[in-house]
Image (cartoon, rainbow, N blue to C red; front, side):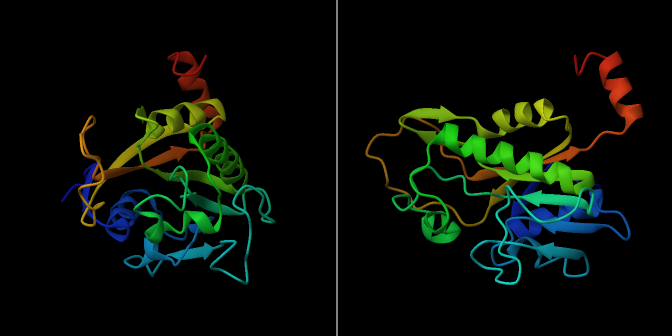
Length: 210
């Protein structure tokens, strides 16, 4: 069966689909926000090096500043804290955002993503994978996946694929008395290429980059 952009299940299901299309034999992978390793539960055959300031004591690295050398891995993976005002959100117990970030709002969240993406690009030879989720903050839609596309382009990455995960586990209902926005039971994973000189010339010629 062909790999499709929409995946139903959990993060492990998502990563298994992404890996089946984009991981090449012999690839080395750096997961810069490893957590408990849930991404890789269905991909234990892959060569993954995880780091996390909370859950990986042998590699307690800040994803924005790692000791890895330039181009040390083939792929770098990033899923930083993205929930605004951590500690007050109904899903905080799942992601432990409050353990690493305190009261961030959308501009600060996007800045941390940008710094992480720059670092991921530095240490990767071929691809950067970035997980994210859109939010509503202060009554306004925050289209994080659109912002991250623009950030990726600005730091010299090429958006190769966008996967959508429709999650089995969803936020409990009843948080709001009046609903103003559609619920978002889905999240995204960008697959960015680190373009070769040949691809850069093509993108420039076709005005994808200016």
